[in-house]
Length: 468
RNA sequence: GGCGACGUAGCCAAGUGGUAAGGCAGAGGACUGCAAAUCCUUCACCCCCGGUUCGAAUCCGGGCGUCGCCUCCA
Image (cartoon, rainbow, N blue to C red; front, side, top):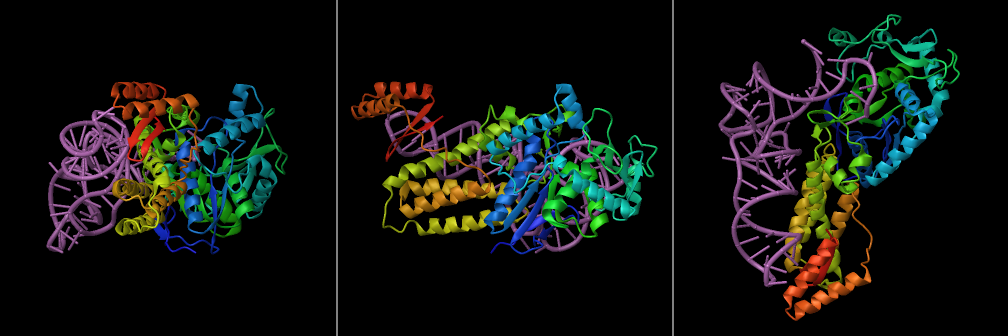
């Protein structure tokens, strides 16, 4: 099934470990999705693109991947934002789920196997809380329900810090009613006018953390293979999920905890509350989504990545380098030399590149390394194609590039674009002028087309055009 | 203060013991009628100071600097 041994870094054990799913051939992944109260920014999408790339790679390696990513469609921020806009919470959720899907699709993020919403799983959430109450791991307080952290000895194992240690530097407002400052809310009673669901403890809504525990269990069972999220979710979110799930089920919630490092902007984490965000919907107006994705994959996922527009622009240039190579291959294919073996050492190099590409991603999803392999091939292919246009060389290079790009979620098949008849005529006119050595006229036509966004390139196999 | 990361070329970024991948930008050359694209060449005292080792960007100790988390966070 898989010839490559995959290693993943696990936050819980703080080491790279060989990846072995619970059930051979099948991988269950739960990723914490967005709260849909606003346009998602490029930092949010770093995580989603990484999750998507992981899924694509695992499928390439022959696994069936059950990828579940939720939408948080009810919480304090949702209510506040809905009030500000004067719309209902469900309408707000619909709007930004649609926006998320549009942005995600543009970036090549495939729809998950399931994308459940918190509001659609209130019964499961209530059942989970009842279980925790019955086990003595939670308590009711004036219509709210809290998790009793003190009764879960493993609390702190993911973030590697006990509640006591945390308290030392605490600058949190402690709710004096709670038994312990570290206790967190499972069920939150609602105020008049707020969306609410009936429960044994009165009308209210789920706490943030419990929805993921309930939905992960609902769709993927007691233990998922990979639980993923941003690094900022390690504490409290994932720590609390562990307490809720493992406290009730007495089984590990996840076999591997995967956390994506933050995207920074002007020296600090990009986040809505700091006001230093670039919404993806806005960035997409200036850069091609494939460039944005290439940029997001340019650094290893556990390394902080600084966002600057010039870096996306640099990725766009890099992307064009790959595109030029693909265009050259397509242009060359009709002129390919058939019935020749092709440069054997190059073809062997290509096979080695395939293994290197795969090995890079197998090593804790090292996308930066994988990109380097891709660019190596582009350079070597361009050099080889100068002297060798064997069909095997062209086709196998093309297959490598397309497959590798697909694994990274980058689709460059723009479709066969047709030029207008007038442009075709101008190109033909220019060719005639060149034949007649009327270079002034030829250059005039080339300049005119350039102004119209069409770049001409003269090759041994005839003139080639591209958008530029 | 606690916990966790990070510091590699002008910029971005791989590399975790055998003397530095890749991309962007720059310089020179080749190709071209000229271009474009492409190729070749060129561009690194691996934050500092000690230590371990035949050998350290990589391991250990100590500095300096940056970032994240410490109950909104991808």
